Amino acid sequence: MTRRPLLFAAPLALAALALAGCAGPTDTAPAADAGSAVSAERCSLNKDAGEITYLSGYQWQASASILEVVAAKELGYFDDLCLNVSLEPGSGETSQNTQLLAAGTVQFTPLSLQNLIQAQDAGVDVLGISSYSNEGLEVLLTMPDITKLTQLEGTILGHKGQLPPTVAAMLDEEGVDMSTIEQVQVGYDPSVLPRGQVTSLTGFISNEPNLLEAAGDEVTVWSPYDYGVPSSLGAMAVNPAFASEHPTAVEDFLRAILHAYAYCADNAEECVGYTAELSGDGYDAAHNQRIWETEVATVADTLPDGWALGAIDTDNYAALGKMLVDYDLLENPATADDASSYIDTSFIEAIYDGDALVWPAP
Image (cartoon, rainbow, N blue to C red):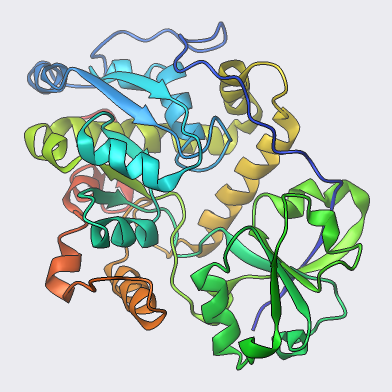
């Protein structure tokens, strides 16, 4: 059993940002020759895909599956592969993103494997194509005096609207009697925890811990991953019809963003500068850099040796489906065969040689 003591900073208001949908390369982005990383034949196939629209998960937050996509455009990697990609900021409404994706209004959007299954359960046809980690972003925070989760019985738990199923599964795994816990909806100010207004607080591993860091309030972060609970981080989905019609474009979209991921893992400040430019005034670049670095570290810590970054762990995916069934979160639970059709691992497989990303493209 692993617990993660961390130091936390003052709260940051999550105000809506005024964002441009797309921007050209910044002055620091290297110039690229169109098609310089792809054969003429493949370049032609990718051009046939036309304009490809990517919709972010939440504005231009520097999260995995957002930052590297922006960087791939700014660094010219999409141009290198003859992909015409436009970027649009998402509102954070997962259901809206999935509906736009299924309708073909956009072609790519970040989507956790859990949300993918739930979208399909609701009749929204989208296709999962990659995932960076089996550890999700959702965590539970407590003060250090909580040394085992059963101590939360008889206390108040704060969440953002509902208890994440991964956190619920972790508490169940530890034998916590949930009927004794009062659940309350709180805002986005995590200082309610050190102020004692709640005994535990749900959050995101890359957000609340970094928001509270400067205040020096020591807390404990409980990750469902450490208790064998399945999840996902940095997963991407595509419109199924687009994927069927333009498989090389899907492969090379992934190729470009994974190439950018590696670059941004080593050049975080530069890459966050790209999302900052898209966002305009009010963007907290320092906090967003901490978000990115935390998620990159999480991915690195959970990536098995020899595993291709982005490859979907089908065992973890199956376990996710079972968890959603166990917690009655699906109206029409799919068979295993049906659920397997919600993902396609072939696009990631096509762009790797073992665990090495193939760049340039064939």
